[in-house]
Length: 227
Image 1: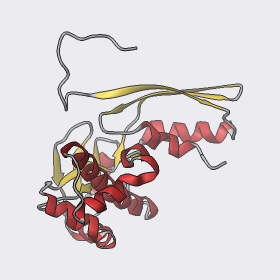
Image 2: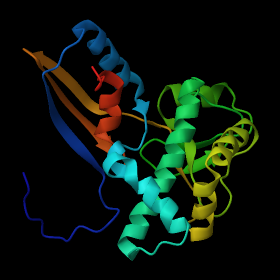
Image 3: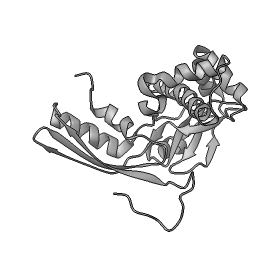
Image 4: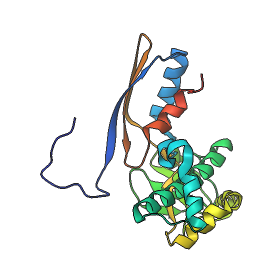
């Protein structure tokens, strides 16, 4: 449903999105899926950028590499391609921490962001209080949105992110040269109002996410699209 509002919506004012999704032809273990969804409801999900950020078959990454090699594009498409490059590097950082099973745990040198806020702070050596706040979902470790300037992290996290940047140096160098400033994004996002129901061969999902987070990031946790 779409209705007219008395005020024009400006970029950045979106608080979040509510989703009501129907997955048809669903097949799987209902008990296992319910357990996965219960865990997501309690602890959130890895805050990946969705595949749609990268264009059809991920071609935005090829386009941004072409941009860095001298291809001319419109201002609008330049912004889209640069955003895709930053999202790609962020997803690689997050994937590295998911593999190491520390994406939702504090590491030395982490920068944390308050839940549903852009306020952030760094802790060189996390103590028990930081660990408890992370576990409670009050704060989240962050990953780099690459660009020009200081990433803000140190120690273990600085080394981890530097290794990802080294593997994708052409993207990283191009972003730095583009003038985009370094930012941070939470590695984890809480899922509000999550509810689900099975009916015949359908799975019905309802949930809310803050602006900038993707429903497809939740779906990837419970659905194998290759089956």
